[in-house]
Image (cartoon, rainbow, N blue to C red; front, top):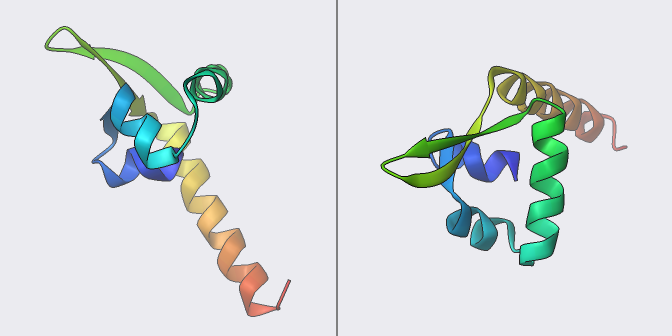
Length: 77
């Protein structure tokens, strides 16, 4: 979900996130609640539409995750 938001420039509409993440509506709601609670995503309003924005913490998490992924692939983990 975080990568999907980043791919859309850091903000995304709820329906676009639903399709990009390939989740059910209920699962999307649950995961968004977790991500917002962790401070990785925030809900904003743009032109009277609800959107989800990747926070600075969310960007940092994605960077660290990418570093870890590259590290583990290097060692075949």
